[in-house]
Length: 221
Image 1: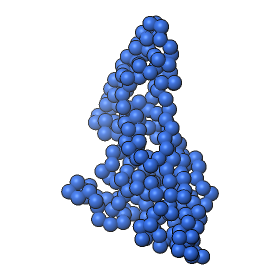
Image 2: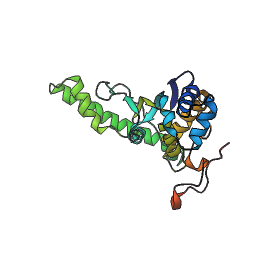
Image 3: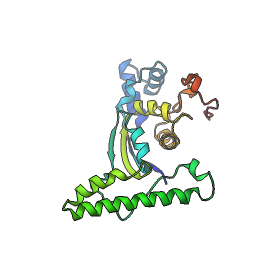
Image 4: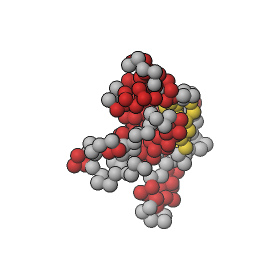
């Protein structure tokens, strides 16, 4: 099961970004200055913040999408240093679960077969004289995108706004969309001014997806 936890951010995110905005225009009102800066698209003041999230129970497929966001720092559970022969968790797509009553058990049976292949290759590599790390490193090549992992990601508020525009959108893949909304919920608690308009791009104007629009955008409220 996916769990997203905001581990660390500035104690007063709105405050530090507001101070930066006020400095730029020699204002004595940080909150007003921040609102004006955001409204005018002067978003560099939002880079004076940092948010670190612990994300658990997500697939390696999600990881591949997440690391496309380049202005971020990532630390990911290693499949090289961690021996996954005793236990390996998997993420089951909801659409597969909903196909029929037996679909989830069939999916997990397939994952179990793959896990058996992993252990077989690991054992054979160890028997051939390779180290545990080398065996883990090469046996992991058979593991699927569904394999669950944990990671830490750090972004500044400006990059988070961009991330939410893309990944809270209905057209985003379901798993990273779920993660984005969970992250946004927690951002709104600690920095309500910065993130009051955060979310998919359609919250602030027409849908940028053109002909590929979902046709049913989420309600801002």
